[in-house]
Length: 387
Image (cartoon, rainbow, N blue to C red; front, side, top):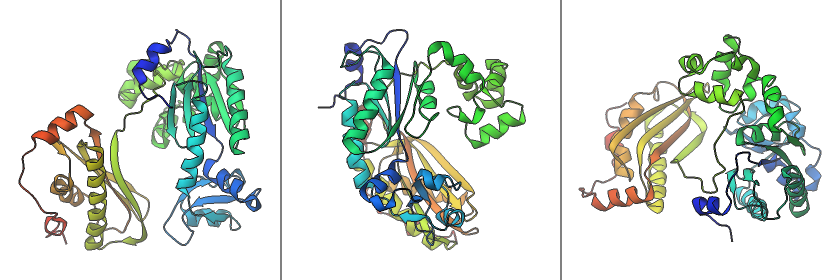
């Protein structure tokens, strides 16, 4: 049985000042599963995602495909241009989840402090572990060997004293690699690390840093917290600490869901608002159903629109009343849509998300005291006049 009570687990496994954290990251997971199940694909550039003639994108790709410059989230059509002989395969999420569950169960043989980040990666706090092994490096090797023996797949591992460094380390010698960053090595390691490799530094932030001469962790060290916060807001303090190897975040066995949403990449670009409304209506109903099943609601509604040229914008609204059902969402969605260029520019992707979710107790209280008139779904009425 997998324990889920995070706080009680921490009482059973007290964490000393210097922790031992392992980050396990499966190598090209989706594509590797396809090559595992279909041996004829081994050694070939495999792309898991939408077909090149569709509006899909690359969900994952094998290392053979990556050699051509292909990466996740790339349009499938572009991927085919880079590698015309690539093999495209539709995702089989049920199969990936099946193997993921097997791998996660394996982790729990070593420690109850397992924090999954996705189906193919997780943090493990092995400071105090079930086998009683004092060496996190030896544990990482054992775990990687167990994964290969149980599934036939390879995984890379990073070992360090916090989550940030362990995650960086796991990607340092991919695929099928192991990297250890000891406390006394962290400063030198980070000093030469390209700024784009730092956790939380996306493409836009990276460009902003490069423009200011911040190219490595060593460059970050020359800036005070106040300077970085002036440049990057609250994230500035985070970057300041990361450059010094400071990351006190614990491995959390229970991850709190922060949002519930639905997103659709359209088969063809659409400009007609009636079509946009139809897609949004289905997404609203899906999100409302998920909120109902989870017995929760959220404070913030976000509409996401990606245009034909891949420009992506979001429009959000936060209310004190919250969003609990389709009527709540539909009461505000038209205003968010009106703040976009949908209907004027072709749209290729739409998404509706309810975020800032209430905790279980507050959601139950708010749902229980809500007395409201029955409102019928009125997408057509709500969008009336926005032609």
